[in-house]
Image (cartoon, rainbow, N blue to C red; front, side, top):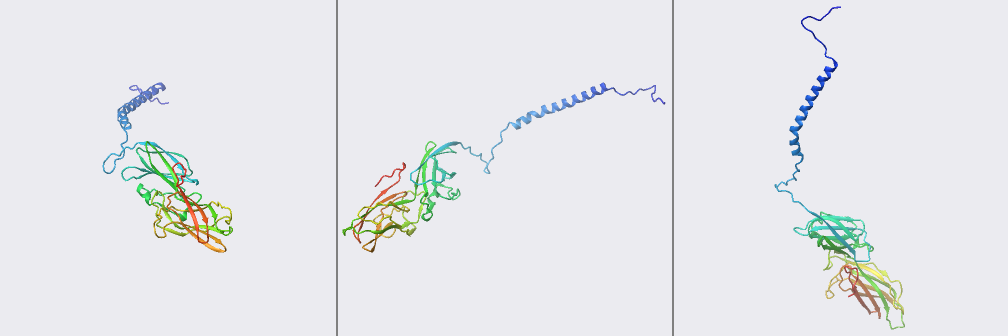
Amino acid sequence: MRDFRTNGSRQSIPNRTQRMDHLSKRRNIFFNLLLYSLLIALPAFLDISCRKAPSPVPDGGEEPEVVDSTLTVLHLQNSSRYAVEDVQILIYKSDGTRELEQLLRLDEFTETVEVVTTEGEKLVAAVANCGKALSPVALGRYDSLSEFGYDFSDENCEAPVMSGECRTRGNMGEISLVPLLCEVVIESVANCLDENYELVENPRVRLTGISGYAGVMQDSDFFPTEIQDRGEWTDLPYDIGMLTQNPGTTLYCYPNETPESSLGSSRTVLEFECEIFGRVCSFEIPLPPFGRGARLLVELEVFSQEDCQSRISVERPTAQGARPTE
């Protein structure tokens, strides 16, 4: 076997311990370099991460306005006997162009509603039983509410359209929901004939000159712009003999505040028809002016084939739901 070692030089292979020491030194150098780099970069990183992101600046270069919010509490009240199936609440700013801030939709009636709004007084409108979702675009400003109307032919006599509004004070507001729909109630019919109490037979009633359209938020000046000529006939339950009958029959219409002195056919009229001695007799009773949610109580007295006297009292809704008689 040949020997490759020479006398002038000696090459040896490092043992295991020497190799481990060498690797450890290299590892320490690497970690020291990494730590040094991190120490240099860390201040810049911390400076970036601790800065607040600036709010987007509008095209005009102005900083965006900071808006404070608050909790606004609304109290709703049903001033009628009708059911409330849904409520939509529109909240407007009270200054400037009085823009719509929020539109809330409630699936059922609740007496207290809490909502987060911006600070300041608000103009609040509530609409119940509308049957359709209100448009935030069409009703985007408070003034647009004056153009919001409803057709009498679309009314539901069990749950009619109702509305109310208020201006908040101290983050609170109260709204009384009042229907547009009005009632004409036949309280009593008396037979005052002289001829041995001849029967007043087949009595029936209807309304003519019914206003066909009204503003949902309107509170006064109900003068018809559209007229529904005649309503349907409604039979009273009994013939009228010696005893006064109290049928309680109810007819429905929209408010009509046309003065009694007004000429023409713009007033709403109650028509009462019956048979006396086999002859069909018809009597027209113009109704006095009445506003939204009114209840008209009618008492009739039949004296002859040409003469029927009436007494009418008007009950108006109030915020407490009571109805004082005028």
